[in-house]
Image (tube, each protein chain N blue to C red):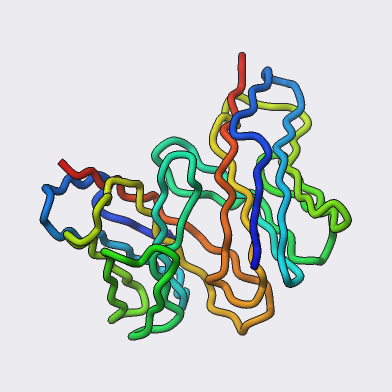
Length: 117
Length: 114
């Protein structure tokens, strides 16, 4: 089956701890994304990567870090600097097309719910 | 700059009646527009997308949406609601200038009454 997997499904963190959320895709997509979802606020982009070993900050990158060492993997670390990390985190991937083509459908994983204790 | 406004945060319909979820957008470029559905504690599933080929777009599960440039709208409809349609729906716009530039609406929660 082709798709995007995220683990774990639920994650609990004590204040001051760093935690890493996993995202893996076997769709052979070049681009990968991390979003944060809070109730009533839609999705906000944290980081994205359009190619291995390169990534860019999104709208709310503070307190988060990522790596992209392999095409199929894009882990997100929530650091202790993130003041309000309790949220639902969604990973997505897409074909990285040339700018202006508009064919930019993103496919989403099932999400990880992070709760700070 | 681009933005999306979902005009209703919550819509409630009876099973078997039509569904209308409203979305207005603004974009500096010719936009791509999407509707996604999210069931509780799940990821987002693509319902349909508009990419300038045809103004009436048919999606999965009997949903469709019509792109109206003059009204800057992309409303989602379904002729007859089913209990399984109860979920949250997101309207999304892309400027087309790069696949990372998606802007999400805040969502419309659809309730279906038996």
